[in-house]
Image (cartoon, rainbow, N blue to C red; front, side, top):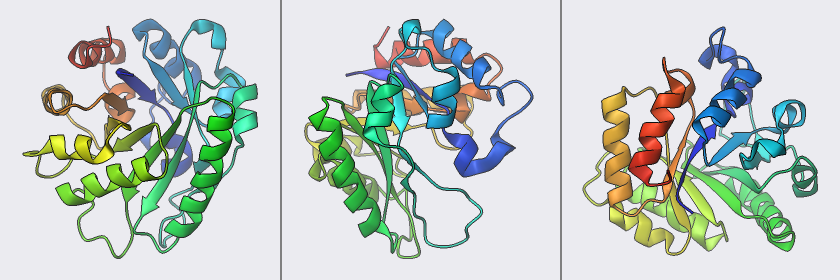
Length: 238
């Protein structure tokens, strides 16, 4: 299950600040995904319903929970779409974010548990965005925190876990071992130039990561298709 996933789930959580006149258009993003032959595209239901066409051959990962950045408190993202609705829109997998360490983690873990049961009942893989956030988290990129996030996803039954890149990458393999059979994908995160993104990708894949799930570092670049193709070569999904 190696691959490069193009994430375009930013508009709800970040607002339109991540976009310019080109990439604010979902049609532009879907065209990039098609031309670059990404291994999957990650969307929320509003865009998926209006723009996603299964016949393009690009698998859809539908994100089932979300939040905005307008609430200034402990992070919580709750379910906004059902597994059945995702299937009706042609999804090949579903995803859900859990903010470990938040005072509301119990709500998200409970929802994830119900969604995981439904997804596997219908034969769909489930991806956990496993991020440590909240007042109790001092360093959300510490290696032990990233490994904890990967382990938590495995323990909750996720097929794939998306994690941040740790601040100390000397033992990336421990993140993979902590996840056991759950496939580990690297989040793109904040803006990186080509060299730094590719360097991180190479280190992660060499350590046993299965792929990348990248958004802004793709669609904000001058040549998104070329950037995806380079990353696919690194991952080995070409």
